[in-house]
Length: 99
Image 1 (cartoon, rainbow, N blue to C red):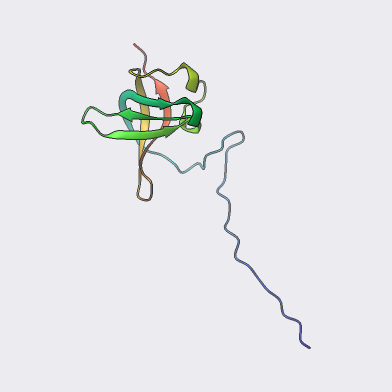
Image 2 (cartoon, rainbow, N blue to C red; image 1 turned 30 degrees about the vertical axis):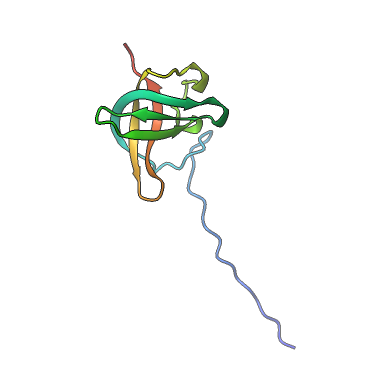
């Protein structure tokens, strides 16, 4: 009986900065909009751009120092717009705009 060796392809994890949960390479273009809806129980919401396009964001997409529970519908926000081919447009590093 001969011995066989099996090798499995394991995907490499992207490099992360210490304390971050997001890979370094996710960058979008600067954009602004207003909070259109919040689903507090699911920790997600939508930002509406001037043109009417709704952009998804999750609590993990907030800029450090921005609390999800402090956001309200109608708040003006700044973010990075990431065009994801699989899941659609998404907001990264969301923060309240200074008045």
